[in-house]
Length: 289
Image (cartoon, rainbow, N blue to C red; front, side, top):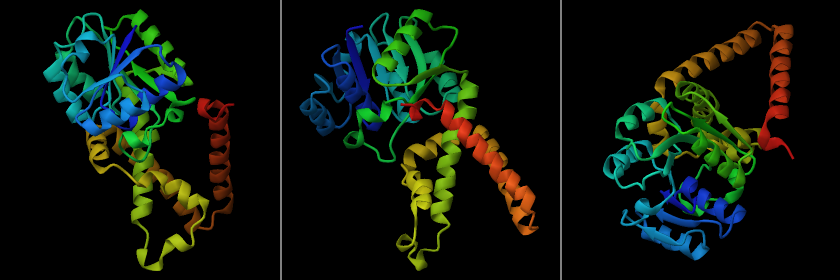
């Protein structure tokens, strides 16, 4: 693998570029396709790509690994347009936060001469755009791969090794539906909670003057990219709404205990959450030194 092409130099694509440069400098030819000429110029100035194009001219035809980091709808259009432009034998992957609907749509458009691997970095930023890309975001982070029966095992292993080489701590393989269920709970529900908490505030009382770290921590991701997350929520609505139901039931359990002064029940609820959080910390690869 000599040439890596990045399609989309936003916060994820840009982080790939910076992580490759940070962990494997001068190892690959790194190029990029992005509609923003200023972004391409900035990436070249930073030394993280050698060449950029606003629309594909020569890049896809030569790249051994193509990493596509686009919004789901844009990704679908891109693949429809460029399916036949990829180099024979290339590994092509995408980084979207939904998988089953993407797989259902993309499968008919995947040319037989490439190996398309569905993946998702469990790392990102609240902000959007190349300027917020940071190689450190990938350090010890999780990465999910959703293999299909069409994938070559050697290519999955090569891609997995590449991911670990640029900082990822754990690469896991899951089915598309399991991915969407997990993401509906661990990512989309958490963003929904942050949004609801932020929007439930009575702004007339100038809450910002009185908050502590707990409020800051819980609402950090409420500063959200409305276009991307609307797509993600709607494309994964079934799994997300199931997570809503589970969360609302747990909130009702705590609310009932408070209403009825059920002290022992509240102790049990808090002990359960503490035990689960401690178990999570022991297993979380990003928390380990």
